[in-house]
Length: 267
Image 1 (cartoon, rainbow, N blue to C red):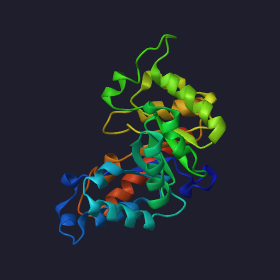
Image 2: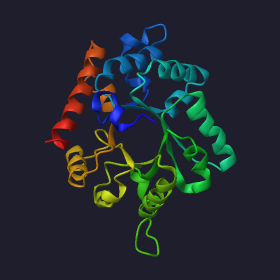
Image 3: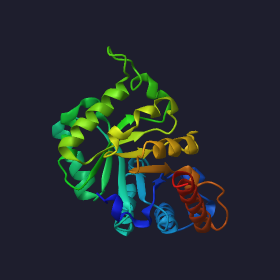
């Protein structure tokens, strides 16, 4: 885990590494190793502004062994003081999770991981057992289908997401290395993010293409004095307004978003 106090750039910006070949310019597709070139270009172009990189493992896994090689190579080249998140959303029985955790934290060397909590505490314990790592538990996601389960009302009138938050707070008292994923699109539920989770890091996807309101999110966090958070952006940085000079455009996209986050939150 990269502590907040040591984060490079003192940045709340998380750059999501999503490989979408159909959006990558032809000029890069002509390179000898186009996808590896692209991912490394993103890292090099944003390292002055990023507080974290979130690697969506699905995009690498879809490429087979070549994707794993790209991931391994890129992780070795990432600046040490920028948090590297393995966006895997793992969730399985404990004996299997033990090996998922070993893959994420030992083989790839990620600083943190995203976890699906629906199989319960024992399914995540192998991840929690790694000291110095952060485990972002899915509390309320940004997708439209989040309401199918995460917003189901329980007997006490609360929704399942509230129960997950309660459990995360309890588990964090023991392990002190938990975080949550909370979608920026879930405006109506942001009131649940208050001082009771001040020691829990918040990873917030859903800004940009998914329609999350950045200003609303940041003003809520500021009002509740929640300082440990990351705002994730993938397509808005990697593919927005891409021109001939892709490196310069990506750099500028990252710079502008970091500046916007800082201007709103620290205003």
